[in-house]
Amino acid sequence: MASRQATLLQSKRQRSLGTVGAGQPAGTASFSRFMWIFTTLGLVVVIVVIGFLIGIVRALESIDNGLATSSNSVAGATANVQPLPDYIREINSALSDIDTGLKPIPGQVAGINDSLQSIRGSAQRIDASLKDTSRSLLDTSGSLVDTSDVLGNAARTLGNGLPIGP
Image 1 (tube, one colour):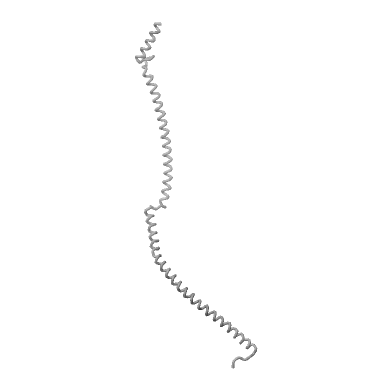
Image 2 (cartoon, rainbow, N blue to C red):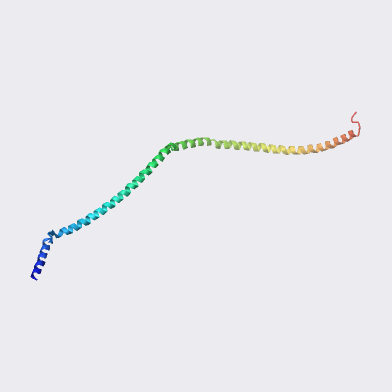
């Protein structure tokens, strides 16, 4: 039993001195374990970062391809586009020409209105004249009926062989 106690005491002393078994300090095992964990986590982080970077590179390549396509389209469209300020100036110029053309219209409308009033006055005078002519034509119509009767009688008389005149 004494030898057993001596072995336990020696083991306690070794632990208190920082050595365990084959001459390794006790802190070395903890440090070694920490280094493995730290290295493993470091590798995981590096792999994740590499994965993200690969994804970013692919997205940038896709964007680059899209920009090349867009660049060709834009180059083709430049012949058909006009800068906005120039286009607005062109529109304003056309609108000022239209405005210049429309400005005399109110004066022309007044002239047209005066002409229409004059035509109305003439039409009213013509209407009154036609009413007088209508009465005159009715009288003439009655005279023509009478003349027709006289001519009909004269024709019948000539048809019977009666001499007319001296």
